[in-house]
Amino acid sequence: MQRTFTEGTILFISVLKWFLLASCIGIIVGSSTYLFLEILKYAFAASTNTPYYFLFLPLAFFTSSLIIKYISKDAGGYGTEKIIEAVHKNSGKIKAFVVPAKLLATIITLAAGGSVGKVGPSAQIGAGLSSIFAGLFGFSDTDRKKLVICGISAGFAAVFGAPIAGAIFGIEVLFVGALMYDVLLPSFVAGIVAFQVSSSLGTTYIHHAVDFAPVFSESFFIIVAISGIFFGLCSYLLIEAMKRGKKFSSSIKIWPPFKALIGGCILVALVFLFSTDYLGLGEETIRGALAGEEVVWYAFLMKIVFTVITFSSGGTGGVITPIFFIGATAGAVFAMVLGLNIATFSAIGFVSLLAGAVNTPITGSILALEFFGPEIGSYAAVACIVSFLITGHRSIFSSQLVALKKSASIDLELGKEVENITPIFKERGRSVMEALLWARDKVKVKYPGKSTGVAEKKKALDKKSGKEKLE
Image (cartoon, rainbow, N blue to C red):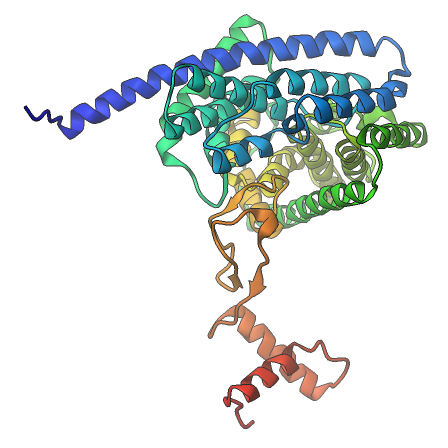
C-alpha cells in the first residue's frame, strides 16, 4: 500500500523535528559555553594577580603551539574558519579532539594576555559537540551540517548574550552575500536556547545602551555613510595585515613552538614599549570607548599589530572580540577628529568592523539593535552595509564561499573560497566606471603625462580584434 503525506504534514513534522534538535544543541552549547567562560574567569583571576603576567606570553604561545601541532591542527587559528571549512568540505564532520584542544589552547593564550577573543572557541567547541551529537545518533550529512551551523549560532549567542544576532551569524558567515534559509529556524532556536541556558547558569552580559537622540539630518546621514567607508578601510587593513602576518610566519622555516617563543618575546617587548591595553580581550578599553572616553589615536592600529603577532606566533582563540576592540577605538578616533559624539561612533564602529571584516552586515545591524538600542540601529545598519561593500571580496575567514559580486563592474568566479578568487574590472557600457575612464582619457589627451597603461592596453586589444575606432 502506497503511503502518502500532505505537504502540511511533512512541514509540521520537519518544524517539530528541528525545534527539538536545535533545542538539544542549544542546551549542549549553552552549557559548554558557560563552562568555558567560568574556566576562563578563574584563569584570568589567577594570571592577573601579578602586574607582569604578560611575561608568560612566550611560554603560553609555546604550549599552545605544541597542542596545535601534536593534538589537533584544527584547534589553531580563529576557530570559526575551521567550522566553515568543515561545513563546505567535510559535511560538517569535526574531530572530537578539537574540542578539548581548542578549549585548553585558548585559555592558555588568553590567560597570558594573547590578543584573541572568546567567540571563535565557543563556536568551534559548540560546533564540535554538535558534530559529535550528530555522529552518535547517525544523522545524515545534510542534517549534520545543519546541526553544526546551529552550534555556531549558539556559541555566538551564548558568549555575547545576543540570540538574534547569533542566529543570523551562523547562517550568514558561511557565504559572502548569501543566507542559508533552510537553517533559519533551527539556528534561531539554538541561539535563543543557548542564551537562556548560559544566562540561567550564571553568565552575565553587558549591553551598553548609547545615549543617542535620533535627529535626522542630511549632514549626519552623510557622515554616517563616510564612517562606513572609514570602517571598511579599517577592515581591509586588518584582513591584509592578518594575511601578510600569516604568510611571513609561514616563510620562517623553524619548529613552530620555537617560532611561538620568538613571537611571544616580541609581544612582551611591545608591551613594555606601549601598554598592556592591547593584550587579551581589551574589554575595559571597549567599554571606555562606548562610554564616550577618548582613546589614543593609534589604539586600533596597535590592536591590529598585537592580534597579528598573536595568531602568527601560535596563539589561538577567536578574532571577533579583537574586531570589536578595533571597531570601537577606530570609531572613537573618527569622532574625535571630526568633533562628533565618541560613544555614538564607537558603537557604530563596533558593529561595522564586524560587518566588513567578516562579511556579515545583517548580523552587525541586528547586533547594534541588541547591544545599543533601536535609536542608533538604522544609522549603524547603513555604516555596516557600506563597510561590507568597501572591504571588497576578502575576509578574515578565508574559507568563506563568495556568492555575490559586490559590484556589476567586477568579474569573478562565484562559489569559490575568498582566498582563491581574483576580482577583475569588467567594462560595461553606460556605467559610472566607463564614464570615469572616458573622462580620464580626455584629460590625458589634453594634459599628456605619465600613462597608467590601461587605455593603451584597451586600444591594443581593440586593434588586435579588428575593432579599433577612428577618433
